[in-house]
Image: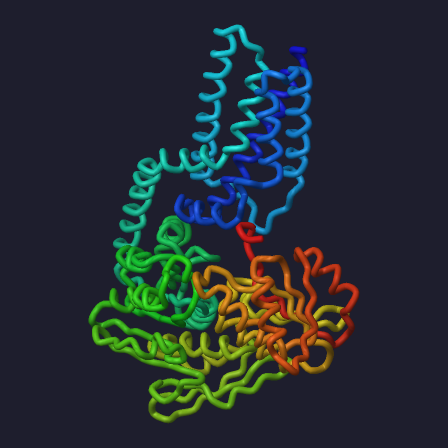
Length: 528
């Protein structure tokens, strides 16, 4: 009997550790913020998952005075074995990265669980109760694992604040030791990552350039870039600035003090946290407001909430692809070809310069405009800018186009779909008329109260830009399908699948040479 109890305790302990790591992964995807994690919990129903409910029922049965110890212990072992296999075998799009912070949180979670377990074992020994209670309470810890995560993260807040403060001061010291470093900030609801990459490639024709890598667009991401990547010989530092709430961009600017600021867009993204587009506008323009008197603002007038925002504190250059009436730099004669795009840049003096690029989509032309304007201001020769533009490779998962050996064209726009970007991606898909046009999408997220409305509009756009629409998951399915079905006549045939794995299986049965697939968005693990 003792051996059976010990086995149950070991299995229950493994179950708890694996669940703690999964919970920690979700907290990491929610930027280690308890309020965002709680928001995810309220919509994901993770607290009432099937395995938690089953485990809760087993706990109640085991605590019942009618229970037989050997039966309850075996039940606990069985439930834990099933869940261990589920947790160990599950694949995630963005798995847990065991950073030092993640290790600290996990350690505190395990310490809290160990304290609870020690109290239970001490109670059992003192009262002469069976150690079965230890296995029962371990399973109960699994049922309420979220509480241990939230408690650990809260307990560590002052520790993280102290550590981050040390890192901040170190990054500040490094930047102050490089007074000649030219710092360029790039922000926007969308387009900022692509613009950062394009600007980096163009400026490399004249300068030694460092940019924030990947999605290092938070204050801590910028601090890490400065401390780990920035070198004394770098001449230009391009800083991507992201935001989930007002004040985020100002916090980055207070550290790096940019001289040039680019605002690529102000649109309906992250409305879940921003609430209104006015708050988005105010936050994005924190970059422009932080510029010195002799600085330069470069802003995209194609977006109404950029165009209607006056800039009086610094010289401001406005650019546009469609809303060209008030812009000083515009793109015209945009032509898409199987090998890329050609367009002409029209300068304020009426001078026209032709550019050729491997990139496709109006959004990429717009992002190139911002990068070209800054390069011109920094006196990069026009011929070198033209050469760099012709060599720029598409940024992965951002309207990236490639052709498979089987003759199928893939348009990969899987990262961070938004109302404007998804419309542009569908416009590109609509032009691919050689074979079937297929869109694979779970829809758009973090749109607050307008989530259903904007996904329904997305569906209406799909209706005649695609021949086959594969709607993945349940999160936005109803809204997208409604949008498609409300359009008549339409070309899109609707397919509903529960996962991207099912979508791939379906694609295998329908793809033919000449077909084009658009992957529009790929929801993280925090959405179903």
